Image (cartoon, rainbow, N blue to C red; front, side, top):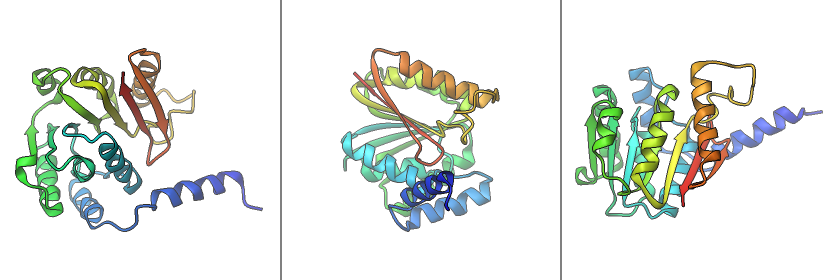
Length: 213
């Protein structure tokens, strides 16, 4: 008899593969291997594309670029005239993101990729000027970036946090890793914030989504 855990995992794996093979995701995996980075899962990338399309996003901020898959997924779903501002302290990640976006056929005029620390760049961005913000950074930085992200969004804007389950550590109360504690802080902050509606999805390694009222 198949255990419930195995059935649950099979359902998760099936959902992850729903979007099917993707050459951009494959290139992101290759870039990740070169940089020592793990790209977002294909299921997460597909979810980001759908969310950007649903929001009809025209102005997007990507905090943390990694291999660039998050930025590519967002622009795939965003409006045709959308502009994405991507921020990463790593010049290698910025270069990888630029290469991936070019491979996807994204015009350079649709992106503004900044090499720098997000906590120094974000305060310079316009409050209420954005449709969607993705946080794809070290978990310990996420609480502060979530606050900044909400500031940047207009009413109806979406805040999305990747790896929100901290690789399945979040539901385990005994785990007190700094990354887990940080993600718990982000989740609790959004749940307790009357100015947003939020939901936590098991896609990839967890996707926390909030809409600003």
